[in-house]
Length: 412
Image (tube, rainbow, N blue to C red; front, side, top):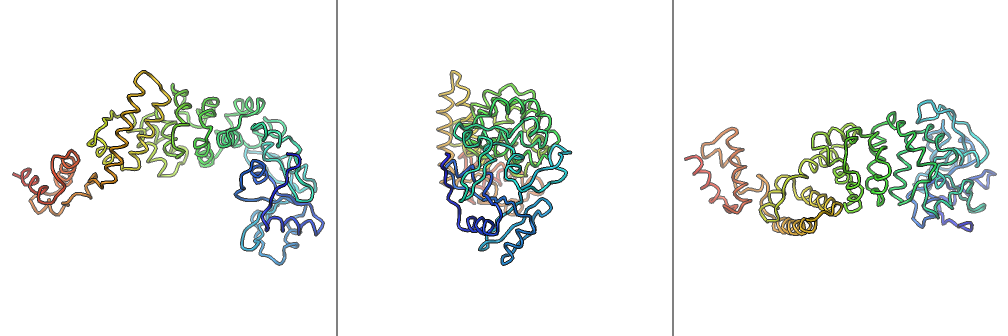
């Protein structure tokens, strides 16, 4: 990795070149370098430079420059319409709230800038003229697949408590282990997460749970999860959750449902609301938890009933959840459970392809038809629900005359 050469997009290379031409140091830095070294195409690029913000503006006076965070040294330059963030080398001031520095101080040294960063794999910089700048062993940690703090781990986490969850997220998403000293510091300092914005915790936790190595992280750091979701303190199935996660689709509501499945629907919903989860995640995950322990029968009728209750998408998610838990809990009957789930999934797909009637709206009659036969108020809705049950159970065809005949018998 010492001879690493990073292929920079033309606009990024041009930014660095123009700053260099004017006598300033400039590097691509952070996640883009990490990803490039892993052979992954970076999603975006950050530039760090010795030039002060006003000097950056002068260098790019022929371009549109946006003062996105000029007090912290960041300006955004539009290069052929694409925004490029350029930040002056800096050192952070004192952290007063375990999250944000009270201020920043600009510096002329790339070494100072890299030393303030969170993890070694994020503390590397690259320029076409100097090559890789790696002061803290980030390249070796990438090779070893390890997440380690820059410098003293306790200091890094006390500066910004969210870094605790970021470390776990990186480990889960990249399938890395966490260095021993960093891991011990995570357990010691986990209470710092209580002071972090719930929205930020939710965003990190979503990505963590959807990571390919989420199971290993959950197994080793359940105490951290209990800190941010206290309702999990009575969880007795951590091993099952950890083993099931790799078998579940990487969908945030489904994986939240797996994590919270012992809480019951109401408590799961409350836990997600406390994290300020979006409405879709909150509703879908808690609904799956509520349906999880229902008995299921591998029949066409039950597949339709499931679709009626949850909709096809959530019904498929529920079966995926059952499957993941069955694969994790390989007790004597788990093969029978998997066979039943296979059959039920087949019936569900069949029903969806056939366009089976599984909602009141899909009935061949509506409320006006029922009202015309003399029913009113709640009786109309109740009658439509009864008709839907009969259709789902194949006791009557979803045809207008057949349904009206049934209603007439009700009325009489």
